[in-house]
Amino acid sequence: MQRLVFAVLACLVGVIQPAIAAADGPFETLPSSFTGVVPAASGPGIAWQLDLLQDGSFQLRRTYLEREPDNVFDSIGRWMAGSDGRSLLLAGDPDEPIALAIESSERLRLLDRDARPIASELPYHLDRADVPLLEPELELSGMYRYMADAALFDECLTGRRLPVAFVADNIALERDYLELLEATGREPGEPVLAELAGRVSRLPPMEGDGLVPMLEPLRFIALHPDESCAPPLTQALLGGPEWQLSGLGDTAIELAEDQRRPNLVFSLDDLRITGFGGCNRLLGGFATHGEQLRFSRTASTMMACPVGMDLEQALLEALKATDRYRVLGHHLDLYASDGTPLARFTAAPATD
Image (tube, rainbow, N blue to C red; front, side, top):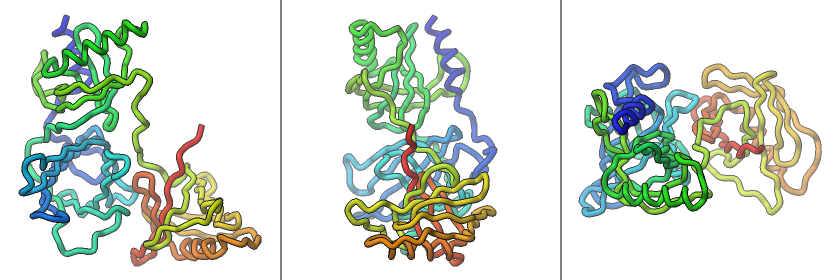
């Protein structure tokens, strides 16, 4: 029975294959690995290896040189290409996503926290490399289930479904899960959020050839029966969300107490924008072609406000000068024809 279950799991999860042609996007083949040594605040630098996998997930290892021990940090998450096809976002840590420029299918370059070029001659690039894929080791959260002598782990950050290897601290994880089901009257195989330190290893399946990504639970931490994975960060679209103004040029905007934040909404059906400029309602038209974006007939109501009018005028001037745009993750950036950043917006959280 166990061999049959693992054979089914291998079909569900998929066996790791050689690099395949990417159907869409900026990379010719996936998985692709990129390596390089980038500058550090102190010390000789940080060695990076970044694996971009064909399921949209990434694996990243950063090794701080000459800082042994405890100098290796692994992270995982989802990767997404920007609307311009020349930028990349690594969405792992929700508080610190990593942005990179795609200089070619062979080279990436780190961007700053605002996804803009780093003004430096230092080597912030990563080059494609023929290296083994990482086996990241880190603390993980995911929906765990055990049934019929087999277990699965749906990891929260990547969404990857991993069979659980019966090694290390698996006994404690399995025991606590079964005790929880019995104590709460849950059905066998019902998923429960589990927290653990683990390693994602590539191991031979019970049946078949190749290697299957599997979770080795190195140290069980806790079960959280009343919680579940947070929704993953996804690539926003120009039309859809309410885009809230967060910066003009290179400067974050500051609002007075109780001041409403300017925003724009793009309607792709009729190529119209609506929104709020800081004092008045805005409306107008727009047109896109590739990464080009032009606003037209932008107008506002004619109210006078004690605060917000200067901000509104600056926003209107930015819209008038806009020549192109980029959506990367949950950010919309507007640029002049020479690449000067004009405005940055953040997608408002969706409401039910």
